[in-house]
Image (cartoon, rainbow, N blue to C red):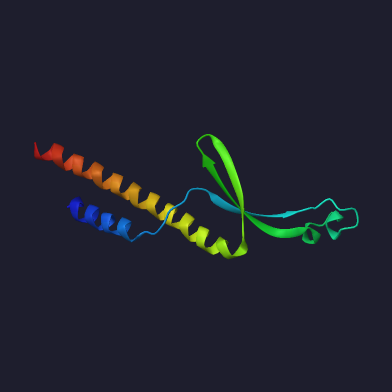
Amino acid sequence: MPDDEYGKLKALILKIGPVVPGHLREVRLRCGRKNCRCRSSQKKNWHGPYVFWDRRDGKKLTSRSLPTEHVRVIQSWLNNRKNLERIVLRMNRCGLRMVDQLKRSE
């Protein structure tokens, strides 16, 4: 019966840690100083890589640079969000099966 699966999915949600929306991107940048190595056309000579956390805040796209020591933590929270969304999709499928069972029992 889908109720058993639904209960297991609820238990999985309780084990998920913090969740945040968005994604991480890595960039290399130029500084603008005249004699800097970053004036090269080769990106490997540009400064960085720097990691930015991008997300939507309502309709606005927000971006924040992250210190290196925070990247792993934020990435795990982003992964938690993806896992939560997968679990919710599975819960929706269970709910649809339960509706079908209700129809058949009438």
